[in-house]
View (tube, helix red, strand yellow):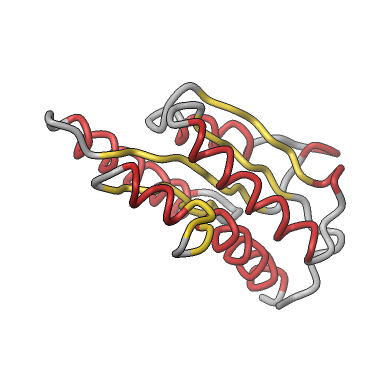
Length: 150
């Protein structure tokens, strides 16, 4: 793992499915701290739902000066229901984060759980399959190091 001391990260988290997204956030923060990021270099912002993650990420990524971040981690959870809402939200967030990565100067890390059941989400938010927030933070550190190495 690259040394992350001196790196600054924004984390945008969805309030929807809060029991899951708060665990993802916890995992991301623990991993950033464990790898040398200071608490003051972790900026957290909350948005109402997963669809709003794209706008929130874009706004955090545009911060300048002392507030500027090296990468933005996006954390959310969408669980399939009985309507096509799941597909629209997941597709919109995926395309939005892809567009930010293709057009902006910093990396945007996709940490959106897209599961069929609450149990699958629990398994991926600190349960038997680990914590995807942790994995998103690892990816963020590696992508900032990648950019710094160019």
